[in-house]
Image (tube, rainbow, N blue to C red; front, side, top):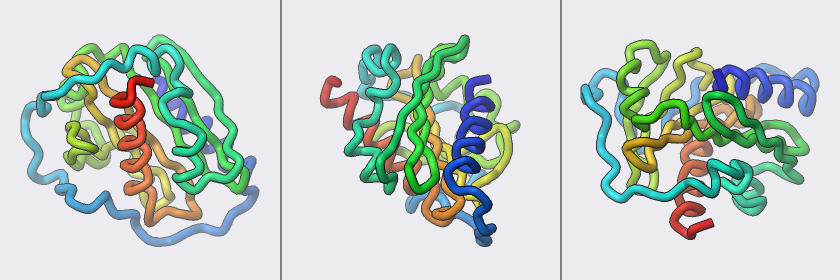
Length: 194
């Protein structure tokens, strides 16, 4: 599964870049305006203004510009693209540590609806919207928000979703808001027609 690979890869990148970092305590909070997982709708919200993501699905590192990545707090970021049976993705690692990843899950052909169908298996599930598009903070592999790892899944059409994952133990309290900012930057890229 692409998400497992991203988490493992980002963990390795983080360890390599930060060495033995001190443990950060506390709990990351979801972006403002999100709801808890106790009141989620039974069906995924529809995307009212679908976006064409074909360019960034083909070239996932075009999902975010270098300026976007630097704006997320990463100095001198390096990128690495990936493709597998689940889709395409790109991760950026900062010189001082931490990473961001964008993954286009083309294997799920019903966008967020595919995730909503298995939301009971997610460790956290917080519906929201990003730049006017339906989204949900959630991870099916574990809740690592307190460790600085947060994932937001965003529907850009009723057939396609992507996830933005922010991973930086040094900035754990901001992980979800920065994942949301990365996702909003992707939406802006799509609207600009990149």
